[in-house]
Image 1 (cartoon, helix red, strand yellow):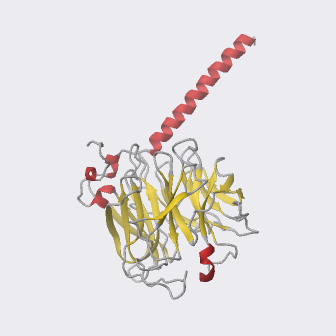
Image 2 (cartoon, helix red, strand yellow):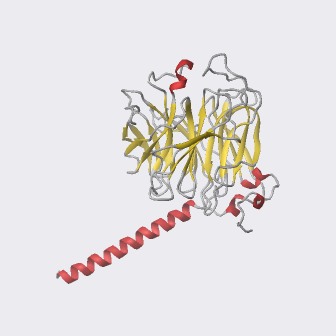
Length: 398
């Protein structure tokens, strides 16, 4: 082959590769983003019990629309958007203590363990294969199993960044139990929230700088359309609402921490917070966030600073923000009974899950830890007859 022919061949190959890559990105955007109308329409609300006892830490929707509810080393799938659920099946014998992230660009579902491995599915959650990973420590040297280990369970599921220079990065919230690696009340003031992120599809994970409030843990994060990341964390030491911070560098550094005026952290009146969920609805041009936690005024302060009270958890509720988490003008009660930890998921366009929001939470009529329930609803149900366009930023037309 002549040099001219080789150059021609390479040029054509590059054009084909570029076109294929662009088409893949386009298809991915189409597979991720949904129209706001799909979340509206007639109100939708379903509820079911999926597991017994405590658990239910992650819920994600695969690229083919299969909704996957995780409970430690088990999951239950729904192939019809959450109307019915398959029997529990095991991910792997050592998949407990993990958290889940779905890679929006590859479709892979990663069940990540802080102990140096993950369970990966490339077939929309039907099968999982165990693979070794590397988690790098933070600046204190914490995060390694032989030092102060990382905690990944009891967090909202991880996300794929979709905007800015870190587009494609996988990131999930995490927790450090302080230098003693203890959850005893005396050590809770040393806990701090953090995050881990990966730029190589989950093979290597870097710990972020610490969340800038001590006594925190059990967190959630969501990316805003300008590429910033909102970090939302439980706190164990002081009476009040949820703590918030922001990242403008892809989740490596968390800044401008403050206590949210709107979102409760477990029952009001207590310093003992509660894990809650947070997601951004994947609607292009909008920053609509959904948050879940307890809407109860039965809280009381523990006898010891940083101590535990679990007798007052009830009334799991969801809130909506239409301005990227600045204000939260809409809320609706989901379950008027004993309830506790919760997390959120969202459906997939072109499938029966499209336009649906999924709330996985602990609760039951007799006890907050009697089982794990799933509530399936849409924005139309959450608004409860209110006009969506009253809440959207000015300049957005019907």
